[in-house]
Amino acid sequence: MGSSTAIRELQRDLENKANDLSKLQKDIAKNHQVRKKYTIQLGENELVLKELDLLNEGANVYKLIGPVLVKQDLAEANANVRKRIEYISAELKRLDGNLQDLEEKQNSKKDAIFKLQQRIQSFQAGKAKA
Amino acid sequence: MEEAAAAARAAAAGKGTVTPFASLFPSNEAQKAAKRVEEKIGEKEKELDCINEFVTENANLINLVSKLPDELNHEIMVPFGKAAFFPGRLIHTNEFMVLLGEGYYAERTAKQTVEILTRRGKVLDSQVESLKANMRDLKAEASFFDVTASEAAEGLVEIREDFVEENPSKKSSKSGKFLPLHPLSQLALLGFSPQSSPFNFQAINDKNDNKNDAVEDDEYARIMSRLDELEKEELEAEDEEVDAEDDDESNVQQHDAAESNDESDTGEQTDATESDSESHENMQMEAKSNQLPHQIHSETTKSGVDSSKAFTGSIVESADIIQTNSRQQAVTSPQASKPAFDSSKATTGSIMEGGDPIPTNLQQSVTSSQASKPAFDSSKAFTGSIVERTYNLPTSRGQPTVSSQVSNSQPSKPVSRFKMRRP
Image 1: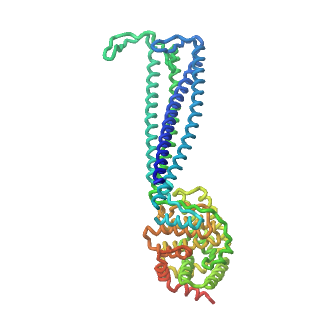
Image 2: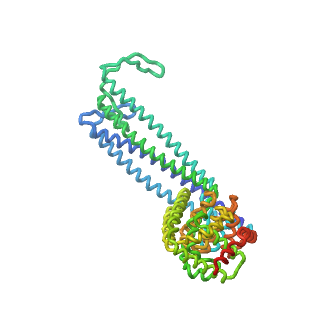
Image 3: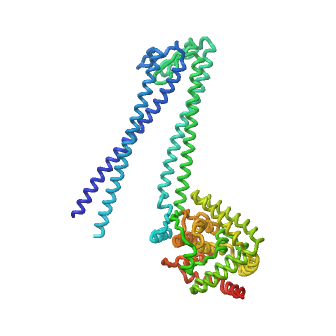
């Protein structure tokens, strides 16, 4: 009787861990998506910066804000784009760190689940013998 | 089943392992992986299509922008809402607001716009290139998975064992069961055809007979000394050596080709070439006699031996050479077995560097157990050799039938030969 309750407990534990693991995996997938988005934005911003660098001094530059085009100074626009690139790069780095963390957690969870499964199996084998 | 049993035996001996490929990479798993990669390829293909669309759009836009300033104004139909158009006129044909991205617009002339657009086109081209490279990689991966899946389905096994250096002389004196037949086994190892070295086969059958009759050790000693004599005779002969070497070279090349067809380790390949050169040296040192082959050649033709049989004989030999050169044996045995059987079945796995005698015997048994599945006439003779090698193992497979078979096939000839040659 005691062994059956122990098994039930182990199974509950296993279930909890499995839930945690799936949550972690979801987080990782989300992280991947966000990262993809940021990488695309980074590429776009770099393109813009290149084009802005190629413009001559007197060129008129506008920024689309909502429905209106607002005239901007070329230097200001340039600075804005640079800042944006910096921000995105920092964000990407942060996401990378996050991802590593998540993956470590995932691996440890996987190990734990594996061990739990083994224990349950050995329990069941013992029961079958008895 | 048989592989699994063999693996268990090998593991029990603690000398080597035989792992069925299917257990390492279950075929359905491999197929799943292949499917996943295929899906990825499909995704990339879609991306590529999308980018290609962009490229053509960009080209069209460049075309249009470069044409617009040709006229001062253009008569056009201006879209009004979703369904309505009204006539209008395009003026300021040389002024463009170009979207640079991220909500930034720049006022540009047509010429400057075209420049921007061509730059954009270049970026798109590079993207297309990288995508294509990506897809090539994925395709290679997919084909690899496919191959793995099919191999697992075919029942390939991986044979692995540690390389243990064994002193040849010590071993042979310890057990009279193993005969150090240097020159013969060398030849056999190299997969000599029965035409060029018929005495090979003869000698093997002699041995089989003797062994199966369970003769005492001194009998072997006698044969051994006899063989040494033959060896000396061989040394005298020089001219035969040349074409023999040619022969063996071509054979070895053949084996190598077969090997590279299978998924073998590169290490194994190098080993194969190594052993190749090694045996060349041996060949030179222990050249065969020209008189002996001739003599026996007539015998063999009389007895009507078919080549596959002779070949299995050579495999038996190769089991023997463990004593003399364990490393070579381990490497070459799969080669030797290859041409005799249908290649996919027989190759059954890569033998890692290895070769202390007993596990190698196990390996041999594994290869043979698989090889005997495809029905070919000499399978019996071959299993006979296994039985004799795996003396320490529970051999349920028909020893008596085999021995009788062997002795039937070569009833009195070997004996008579030795008698005849004995002074």
